[in-house]
Length: 192
Image (cartoon, rainbow, N blue to C red; front, side):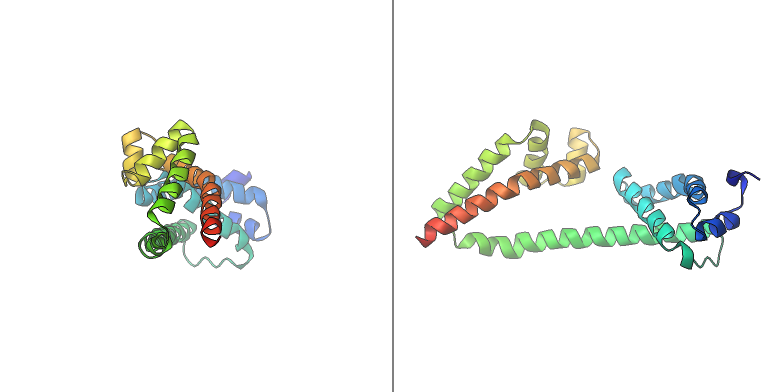
């Protein structure tokens, strides 16, 4: 019997014995169904792919200790449901952390700056933003200046939400070192 024709039980038994080919068959057999389930809950291609990838990584890493007391489809459905919930929980914690920083830390951080120093810092920020590639700059400005969410930016620009996230991450990574330098310069000048 060809490997692709083997039952789920046989494939899982082979996977427990480190059979990568059996794992690939199982992956191909269930990936799309699990992806569609995750996508219908998360409404994001990239997030759904991440969730399913995480599920299969965990499946492989725990292959020797797997205890499947139901059918494999029921087990995988429960696992993807758990991964979706874990992903949503992580996303909510990250959003809450960002909101906490913006609400609690940034006002204290900028309150000790004089209006002139704050103006200088904002001028440095604006200069660095204007150096960003046009598409990244556009996404950054929509997010920071118009307070649009990732979903709203994606809708307005007719691009994927993951593209918006990627461009925002790129913008923050490029801007962060320049802002650190500017802050250090302000602190240094103030201490003289």
